[in-house]
Image 1 (cartoon, rainbow, N blue to C red):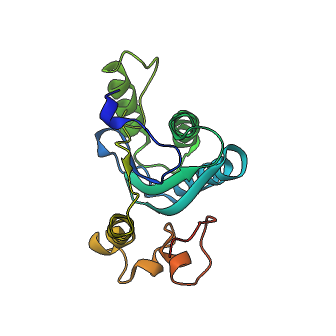
Image 2: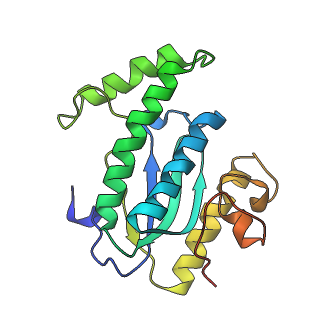
Image 3: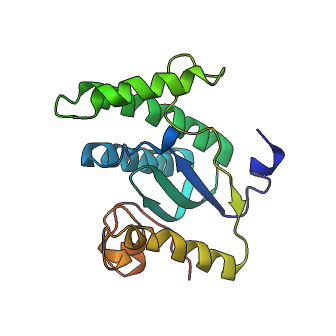
Length: 182
């Protein structure tokens, strides 16, 4: 991993993007989105992950995160490893998944191109963490994250999208505990 893609200062929040290989639209089904959310919640409750802002799209997630305990690199590594296995298993078990054979064909082929994998690859290797330590940068990234579903045409207002912290910032109950930045 390039030095530019590492977390250098654990005390600061970082903007990260987690993207499926080949930009495969996995998160179009609620069962897969909920698994993603459950595992972020696990990292919050058990690994010291702090989530300031987040949004899950069909093939990627944007987050502004920090940590109080473990390293962010370690948390994200474990999160990606666990969710990739769990999501592949869910896809294989989902008899109603119309794209099952297509995804079961793509993930192993993506894995074959990476010598670090044994069977398949679900997430792209990089997270491209960017420190967001100035208020203007944080606001710009939060606006970008929360407007993603609006830009995609899924909702008219950011707070209408369930899988996002925009709800919390609008004073509604969100899916994840978020440390609100004011």
